[in-house]
Image 1 (cartoon, one colour):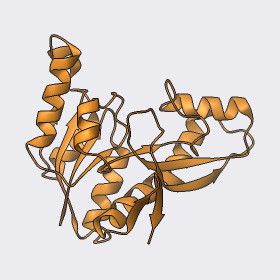
Image 2 (tube, one colour; image 1 turned 135 degrees about the vertical axis):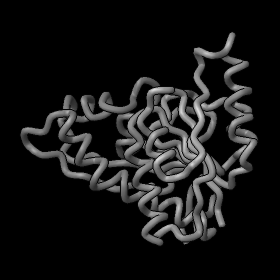
Image 3 (cartoon, helix red, strand yellow; image 1 turned 30 degrees about the vertical axis):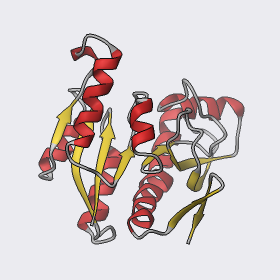
Length: 207
């Protein structure tokens, strides 16, 4: 059984996709042992509680400095000994200490085809605004390992999504979620739980 921690900042639609994949038996060997949010008002916390999942908040505003917050965040993770940490719309930079301690055991979902529209300042609806502004015809989502950079870790899985005439950032965001994010994130977790994701020369091989 793979115990996972899911970290979220907002509504938790990707969290829900993971929960649904476990309930359906698609991810039968996976258990969410804790949901962590930096946002006390995040609906993701309610999603967790409704499904009997331990849910905690670790908010930067509750700590005197960033170092104290980082220590508390790491402690909240360490307490449940996860085999995998899943960033599912978590809008806080992961502490370097956590990245090192859980090397190759932290994955993130990003709403574009990395290396396009990623990096510092590219998150949420901003990604889709940039995609439409650039006039791309195809966008999508990426699941990748987390390293010390921003969206720079080895790519595990990607799925393309068509950009259509008349798309707004909100419409495109919804399509990318439905057609890509909610599919490849549970799939990447399933492959990880089965030991089918292999890292070689900083590149991912899926067996």
